[in-house]
Length: 289
Image (cartoon, rainbow, N blue to C red; front, side, top):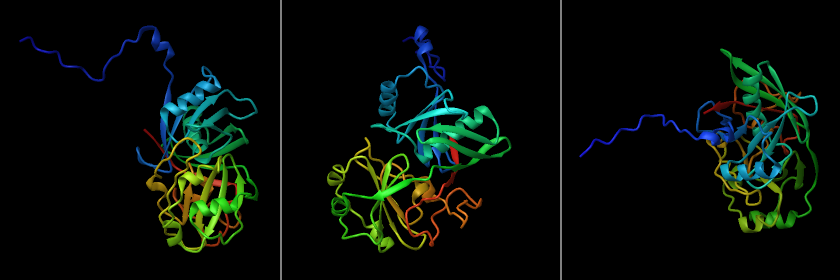
């Protein structure tokens, strides 16, 4: 019986003319320095070949929480970026901006990268060690907010009687609605009715307790095209986010001036921060696979 030749790895694929149709992208893990942990993000380094419809289909095909397409600058930034979930385009989201800053900053060099988003230009300050980016500090847009009109439906879907703070909706890319419960145990014990939440389209629901620093956050949302279990990076703190992504500022400890002290990559909110995050600073680290 003739010997079967052994495959040599890596496999060398000759795709001929199809090679010109290959498009480079990176998968980046945010809020961690360990590959295959944290918040996942796909970043296409050149989005020019794609229409908006193709961008949306690619995001749905990859099925990560967000996929970013980098485009030429249009408004004085270093690059323009578009952010897609599997179901829709977002004008802004925290961890996609931070992850894109790592990719763009690695390519462009420098200590600050300015990213054009649907909510304006967002500067991200980059910390390096041995020439490699290890941390990013972003000044995100200040959200606007208003009372949430469907409060009764929301509370019923969450299975809670009320909120200790007014139930308000904050517009910072996705629309986030905040509900304060009376204890961390109440946050950890939530069992939402996702079918009912699915009728409250276009929002992320964030539940939190008013004090302490330990808890079991979790995250899921049925209206933006996917559900996913949160990474270990978010299993600290007193926030539970029933959405695709908790605003990244909620993970940062902020000083009274609103600037996050530089003492680590993962932090929970201070006990004094009673309401939803409204400041402009966010931080995190990332690992590129």
